[in-house]
Image 1 (cartoon, one colour):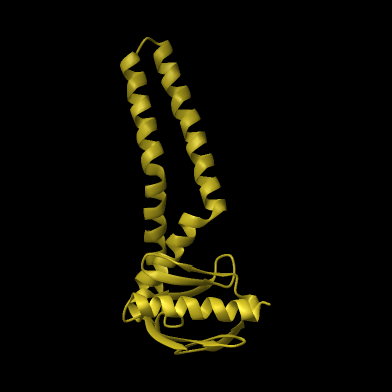
Image 2 (tube, rainbow, N blue to C red):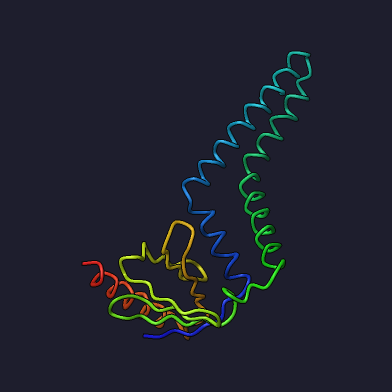
Length: 173
C-alpha cells in the first residue's frame, strides 16, 4: 500500500502541538508552573488581606483563577507561534512538500523530494489517529505525519490503519 500526500506548515505545527498535549513531561511542567504561580499569587493575596484590603484579596483570587484556566492555552499558543517562526526562518523543503509512504512486509519506506528511508516495524513505537492527522511515532519526539486529507474518505483511513497495524504486528512478532 502506497500513500502520496503533501505536508505543509500547519501539519508540522499540529504534530508538535499533539506532542505538547500528550507528553507526560510537558503536562508535569505545566502542573508545576500552575502550583508555583498559585502559591506566589495566594501569598501576595494573603499579605494584602493582612493589611485589611479584602477587595485586593478578591482581585488576586480572580487573577489566580484566570491563570489556572488560561496558562495551558497561553503556553500552547506561544509554542505554536515559536514553531511557526522557526518554519518561516529558512528553507524547510526537507520535511515540507510532497511525501510518499509505502507499507511493506518488513517496514515502511518514506520518500520526499530530498530523501528516501526505510524504517523497520521494530523501529516504530506506535501509530496514533488524531483529529486531522495520523502520526507514526518512531521516537519520543519524532515521527511521520500523514494528513487525513490524503485519503478520499474515512474508509481509506480505516483501511490504512488496519493494514498498518496488521503489518506492524506481524513484523514485531
